[in-house]
Length: 71
Image (cartoon, rainbow, N blue to C red):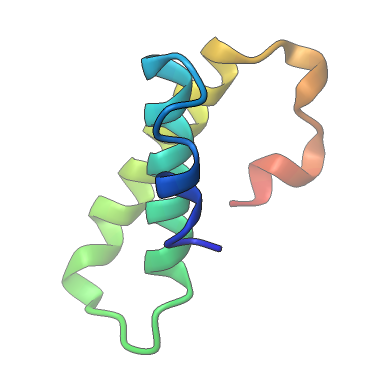
């Protein structure tokens, strides 16, 4: 799902929405990796914050609940 979602969304949505969802799938791909590099964790934490901010900008506040911020 993490690798197929960016391909499926390529022609369906506006560029801003598509970019934020592709970034979200990239974040989840990094989190679910078998091997983590400890040096990359601060960058991943920053990517999560930027991606959630992009999603909050594109979608309404009612879209988000407590569970979406656990990322």
